[in-house]
Image (tube, rainbow, N blue to C red; front, side, top):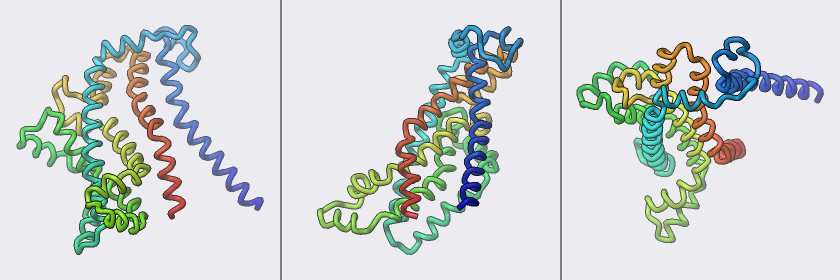
Length: 275
C-alpha cells in the first residue's frame, strides 16, 4: 500500500512538472504581449507595470492577421468536415458490415498511418501543379483530408465496434435503412470519438506549416503560420507585438478544445470503461 502511494505521488509530481513546463512559456508569452518594447527589453521576465493592449491592435493591422485568420479558418474547417464525414462513413461500413475485403480495407488505412507525411511533399507538389491547384485552398484541403483519414478511421472503427448489434437490428425492424441508421443512431452515439478526431484534425490543420509554405505562394491565400513567420522575419525589433500575434493565434486552439472538452472526456471515459 505504501509503495503504491509513493508511485502515485511520483506520477503526480511528474505530471505537475510536465504541466508547468508547458504552461510557463505560454504564460510568459501572454504577459509579455502586454508590455512596451522598452519595458520588455529592461525586464523581460517581470510583470508589466502598465498593461498595454495596443500591441494586439497593431499586430492585427501590421501583420494583416485578418486575412491569414480567414484562410486558416476556411482551410481547417473544410478539411475537418471532409475528413470526419468520409472517415465516419468508411468506419461505419468497416466496423458494422461483414464483407470479404473489410480487413484488407481497414489494414490499408492503418498502413497510411505509418507513412511519413512530409515524405510525400514533392509528389504532392507535382500533382497539384499538373492539376492546376497550386495557390488554391484546395491544394491544402485535399492533402489535409487524405493524411488524417487513417487516424480518424482508426479511432472511429474502434469506437463503433463496441456498439451492440441489437441497436441496428431493432432499427431495421422499425423500417430504418442503412443511411438512416448511420445518421440517426450510429453518428450521435459516436459523438465523443468524433470530438477526439475533430480536435486532432483541428490542431494539425491549424498549425501545419510546411505544406502551406510549398503549395501556397500568394500572400492573399497564406495561412496563419505562414503569416506569423513572415511577420516575425520582417518585424524583428517588435518582440512584444510578435507575442501578441502569437497569443491571438493560440486562442482559437484553446477555445476549440474547451468547446469540445466535455465530449472528449466522455469519449476517454467510455473507452476506459469499455476496455
